Structures are given as C-alpha cells and as structure tokens.
Image (cartoon, rainbow, N blue to C red):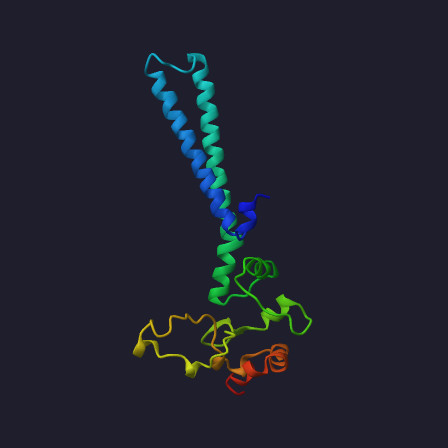
Length: 195
C-alpha cells in the first residue's frame, strides 16, 4: 500500500481511481488521434495490415477503461453515497453500512452497554407520524440554539442533523430503545417529550 493511500481516507480512493482511469482514457484517445493522423500522411506509423488489429485493441482498451469508470462509480455509490443518504434521511442502516460510515469517520457511537456499536446505534433511530431520523446527540438543548432567522447564519453556522431530542415523543420509542436510552443516556432522555 502506497504512503499516499495510507494518508487518505479510504472513500477518497474512489476519486483516485476515477482520475487515473480518466487520465488513461485521455492518453488512449491521444494515441488514437496520432495513429489516425499518421495514416493520413507519409509518416504512417503502422503498416496497413496492422491498422485494423491496432484499432480493435484501442477500442477494447477504451471500452475497458469505460467499464472501470462505471464500476468505480457504482462502488462509490454503494459504499459511500448510499449509506450517507440513508443516514441523512433517517433510514435504517444495515450493519455493513454502519461500519462503512464508521470506517470513513462519518459516525461515532461509543459502546456503552456491551451490546455492540451497531445495535446501540440503532437505538437512536426514531420515527413518529411526522418525522424519522437518528436522534441528534448534541448537548445543547433546542431552546438554547441561536435563532438563525433573527441573527443570521454567521451567529450559528451549525447545521442540525437528525431529530432533536426535544422533538422525540417517548410514546413512539420501543421498549428496548426506551430502556437503553433511560439507562445509558439519562440526560438525553430527560430532554424527550414525556409519555
């Protein structure tokens, strides 16, 4: 593994693959143009009988590079974009998606009960008739947040993601979820709407 690869987060490697494949495609197209140009002059690089064979090889290389780009894009979506979209829209993450986001540094949830990070993370997933999402673990109660409309974004550039604790109605929590949050996050639980 190269030093450059070690110093970057793994999701960044998808961009690196894309740039490398793009550069290779550019070189391939440049070579093809030179071969075509040489065929139109007296400085022809290839013998006439080799032109068709080389042309076929160049087309196959071009298709192979296009397939690399397509596969890279699909993998980036599957391993990076999809888990982030699910997290931001409050959809349940699979265990795999949770650990992908954790490996990318996008989420951190301390293991407090011994049930494991994924199971504990899922206790923060909340849904009622009006909203769904992961409970925001901010320590700042909602009423203490700066009024953005009155003071502008410069006063508080923070973006709130997930469901604010003050918007959580405990009657929508599952029994295990309620028990976990009461026991391991009592300060957070105290900010929820009473049953």
